[in-house]
Image (cartoon, rainbow over all chains, first blue to last red; front, side):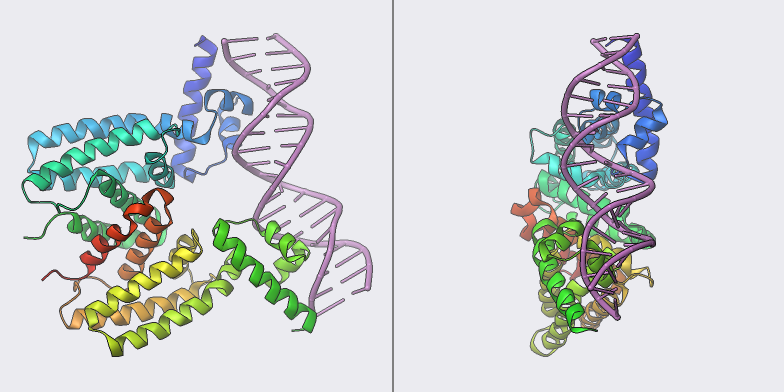
Length: 182
Length: 182
DNA sequence: ACCTGAACACCGTTCAAGT
DNA sequence: ACCTGAACACCGTTCAAGT
């Protein structure tokens, strides 16, 4: 990539990070280009679809979550590792509110720019889930897709401003449905 | 209301029902007016905000759900009545996909056109919940708002096409979190 | 190779002008 | 009273023209 292109790419991403964190995943692309001081066509050259932009924003966080899953396997009991990881994953999804819808759709669509990111994240979660199922701490009738779906539901709840006061409690309710009660 | 106005109102509502059921709650209002054969201003005269249109569409279903809650109290055990009602409420919300977001927001916003409808529906659900809590069948640490939030999460899951194959299973998982396990 | 911004086909919403 | 549709200020997306 040419140096000027690289600069535009990086700056666009930085601006998009702020704008999308503030206004959500549906923020105006025109506005992002405007704030970045580049032409609208430049944004489209680097990110041909909105999903490409979301993917660029989310990939680093997904990689971090994958690493984190590995860490938790070494430092926590399977059930607790799963709960902690799930809480962190919800928080990551919540940074860009509204993005979870695209993420869930991307799981089933190999053409999506977000597909690889979401696939990797589901795999990390599925591994923690399998570990907790092996010890009998998690329900046996869930698979990685179910976990990702429940993560989506939790992120959706977290994204609704009117439910903010109950968000933590609702997390406990749904997370408690994944873990088997003792 | 003048006879011609009434006719337009009814026709707009009938067209909106079809279009929104097909395309979701974000369907183009212009398109609805066009298909109804009236000017765009006429739609706005009858339904000044999108929420007013959604409210008109949903009110009948909400009233039906409220009645249904009463019926179930007489014909089913508290826990089962709650589950059955919740399943039906999710189905109603799913008819107009994407509407659940507005519904959840309306609960906390007395200014919303949807507020009254959602409030009535929450009350009906809360009553079934309280009944199931009294017999110990439902978790004690949930209130009507939590139930409405979980209904929202379930409707959201149901609205994601990629999760359709697992929708029934995910309903069981979350509904199972509301009911106390025996 | 990359950037720009006008152009196209859409939105939601308002409102002056008509009947 | 009620209806109409142009007008306004936005979108996402494309692409000819420039550097």
